[in-house]
Image (cartoon, rainbow, N blue to C red; front, side, top):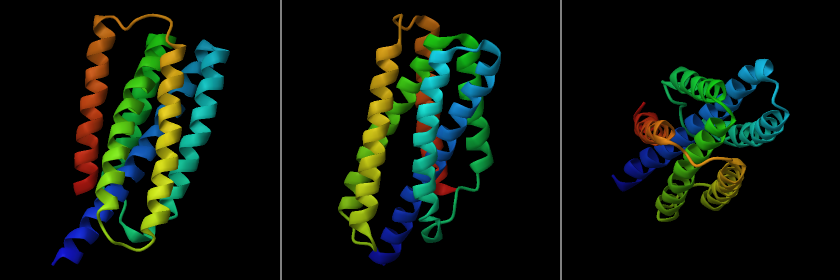
Amino acid sequence: MDNIRYASSIRAELRASHAGETGAVWIYRGILLVNRIKRDSDIDTFAQHHLATEKDHLVQFENLIHRFRGSALLVIWIFAGFMMGALSMMLGKNWVYYTIYQVESFVDVHYRQQINTLSKLEFLDKTDIIKMMEACNADEQAHRDEALKEMKNEPHFMMRIWGKLVATGSHYAVVLAKLL
């Protein structure tokens, strides 16, 4: 019975990470689409660099997808990521950096929780998967720190509300991706 439960929980964790990396790719695509109009070279460099990293993370999870089914809600994570990126870029550079800071702060905690949970289980390629997650998390922490460094102004009231929405939405996205 424990093997079935563990197998299910491992698949749920991988599905949530795959969904999250998919959403992350689309956040940067949303930013870059709106930036075609705004033409901010700093944002372009920032988003292109982070997009490349997120695509690499996504490929790593897609190489494992034979062990789990992807989220049935993947199209929603794509749409939500794209809209989050596009909307933050429409609102301005500081909103982009704050959004990335909020997302990556959530992702850091989530990856650490996943690594802790998976470390307690026995499964095929456990060491390789945990090392992959640790490397992805290190990248996400660097993205978080870079976004914070790039913020020119303290987040005002509306940005803080946005940040809470981003964090809460990220939390519920993980819950749903694990299930569906």
